[in-house]
Length: 107
Length: 107
Length: 158
Length: 158
Ligand SMILES: Nc1ncnc2c1ncn2[C@@H]1O[C@H](COP(=O)(O)OP(=O)(O)O)[C@@H](O)[C@H]1O
Ligand SMILES: Nc1ncnc2c1ncn2[C@@H]1O[C@H](COP(=O)(O)OP(=O)(O)O)[C@@H](O)[C@H]1O
Image 1 (cartoon, helix red, strand yellow):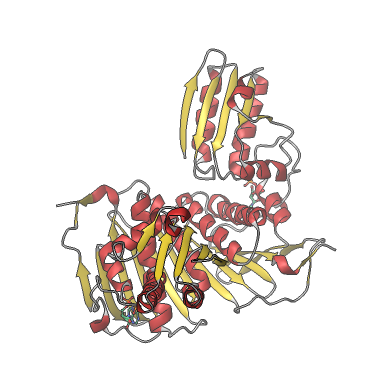
Image 2: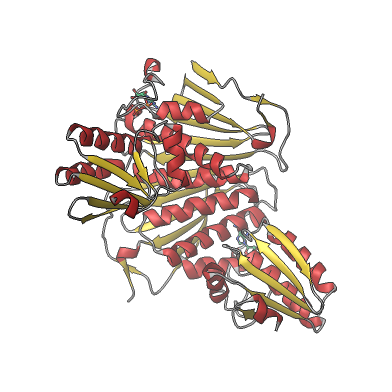
């Protein structure tokens, strides 16, 4: 998995590439929590993610909780079918802010 | 692997989809030799082939030999990188008639 | 023994062409191998005739089960051994995991409700949702988890 | 014993991060499993850091070796067992095949010239071209073929 971060005025965008599983989700969790500290809106680009497991989902939930605590926003975009399916299976598709494109995620 | 055959006036086009390996090449060999009987030019679309092994290469060589014996033509097109690499490794890229597109293969 | 059979799943015999297939793996308990096993399972499910969505689900369930062994049974030690047998029978695709780590506490399997914003506890729910039969037990070699998925041609949605 | 080491291959020690990985498979000698093994090997090569072209070559070599066992050692019987061990060491990715079929006649390995329009005899050439070490021998469990590919970071093109 590769993670790249782009900082903008009112948001930080994190681009993720590769599989999110038990081996890679701790690194993702750490990066996202770190990035969240410095921005009011964390935008996560999942376009390059072809696989996510429950540990990845748990990491995203943890970041969402922290965002809510701090009155910040976590927005996901670019979800492909595989990622959508896992969010549906775990019944979390209604809990996250999900957008189609980066433009919509930043709007 | 799936094989579909389209017959035209001066050529028969065979579309192959899937992997060509020891399990699937006997079926391919049979279909190609059969199709060759009824046409002066056999055109093979390898666009849907992401893998070919030496048994697949051997089948194509056998069809080429039969075509030469009968003064017919065997033309391959749509080869992706993986297939090209195997033809190079086996030093057969100069022996087959290879074209980029179906149009060129039928020209 | 702790077994679960999904109520909606029935089966009729419909042997697939070509006889049974077996693939037994023994792997190091290292998360770097998770993607390798996913790749194996995904392709095996395709060979069994499962379509894309089911193939992705089966791969997810196997990955969750393997991750649980690495994390819970072996407590993240990366030098242990896990056995994963995959068997294509006449009516199902079956996976059997064996480890020599700590046995699963049955009261924690599917113990957390799925719809809350919990930061864990989803793996065993996913496994049970996706698979037709889930069975945890002990055998002489260690802890065993068996997962069964009925083959697509014989799945009856009764 | 019949071994071959490619002259162009040298190696320096450069252990990869995370320690050795082992994946042992026992599979039915059925060609329907070839694509499953290719998928496994391809992903394992990626984990080892091989780029696309090398990954495809390694997958091809393993597939050719496995096909040869099915066809020549087991004469296309589909109910026999093949053991394939994959090991990621500090300096190489190693594959070991074991079968209990007919032993390979060493005089036929790489016996046909590659550049003629022959209708066979290319598998063993491909294996030797792609792999850095190729070794056929007998062990108590049966016939063994070992293939070694040096890891990309340590390959010296001397
Ligand atoms: N293979 C296993 N070995 C030991 N314990 C297990 C195993 N699988 C599951 N468990 C137990 O079941 C609990 C729930 O597992 P799971 O639903 O996958 O969620 P999580 O892994 O996030 O805790 C785990 O916390 C663990 O206590
Ligand atoms: N694993 C094996 N077991 C027994 N014989 C083998 C094995 N691998 C290769 N051979 C022998 O070596 C010959 C050359 O093999 P190969 O180059 O792969 O071409 P082909 O399989 O087309 O004959 C085979 O015909 C066979 O006699």
